[in-house]
Length: 332
Ligand code: C5P
Image (cartoon, rainbow, N blue to C red; front, side, top):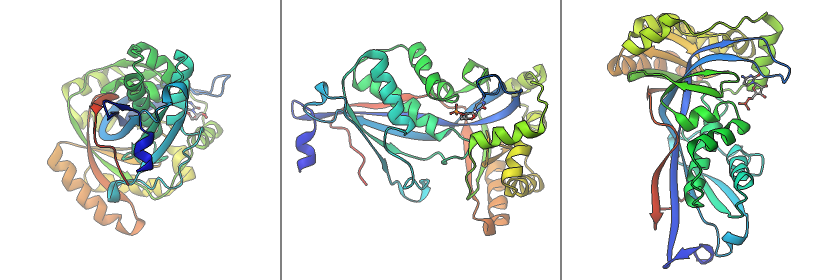
């Protein structure tokens, strides 16, 4: 195959790196008034979920070491995959921008071909694009043998988007500033039900709508929240969930209000818009409760084409899954 001839071979084998990074949900998002740069200061609690993106990276050609070529494709993984057909794969894509930022920061002239298996909803408020960027940074750091420490990847990540640093670090964290200054906090395993709405809303539009209505006062995360989280007191956490962006998201997409009501009626411990929406998430007391909740909500919302799934967290940040010669390269 012509394709094979172009691959860099080491003893006739092809070096491939597979990395993954988590999508996130926010248990709390408290928002302040916009700063001069237009960004809003946040007090937020992130949870890394087991809905993860996979990024495969491979040295592109026998001339790759001298060329900075990058290519990106999305792999169709069937039913569970969000529709990636409309996503740009050019220089505007956040994963490609991550690769470019890494080349720039290190002066590396190496290229790569990238393939992404997408599981995190697109424009759903779960940081799928940021997870792609985070996994790409980790994958190329390994593929190109750059040996950058995580502190430097975090710095590069923060220039790409507010959620990228958290996707790099994972687990559970308190986020401040744009959400890009993060500090790890302990949280036990928890189960959530996710409702994916068949609509997209843009994050900047949600923040703009928020600005129209709020004289925002930034509230810190309460001590009670941290204590309940650490203790796994899910009823208390359910009552304390908050998203200051919810009203703005509902204004742009009223279906969100309906979904939140259905979660409440189905017995969720608490429900919340994830990030800037439209994805909604509901907290369950355990896995069995989550599965029951998911079934009930899926039946009730079947007419609205809402997709429902159970997720769990915390999970690790961006990490290498496999690295070596002759690893399977995902095909379409
Ligand atoms: O950083 P990211 O690209 O994820 O942000 C997308 C947009 O969301 C920004 O351009 C900005 O309009 C808005 N945003 C904000 N305050 C934040 C995070 C994002 O206003 N803390």
